Image (tube, rainbow, N blue to C red; front, side):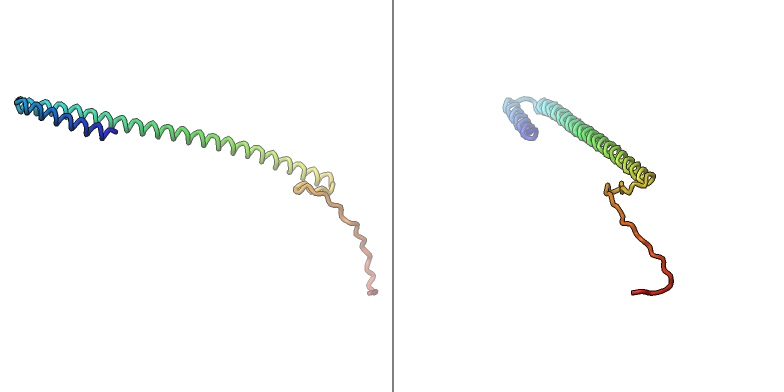
Length: 130
């Protein structure tokens, strides 16, 4: 759109220069007017360039703010996960310690309960029997 506008301005400048030349105006006055118009166009181009840089800076700042919010959210999720993981580990450790102290036979790491059979050991007197 800006290129189209620039082309249109250039075409209008040439048309006006042609009309001034046809009206037998002084060539130096036409060149002076053309230089003034060209200076204004150059100034507008500089402003457009500055505006483009400003827009890019705003886009970059917005993307940085979005990334900071994403990182903050991920950090919050990680802290929550770490808290729950620590609490779960502490609970399992306490259950395990309690199971050892009470000698309850409960395996707190897996949450399973097992009852072992009684073993009867016969004393060996040195003879072999079938």
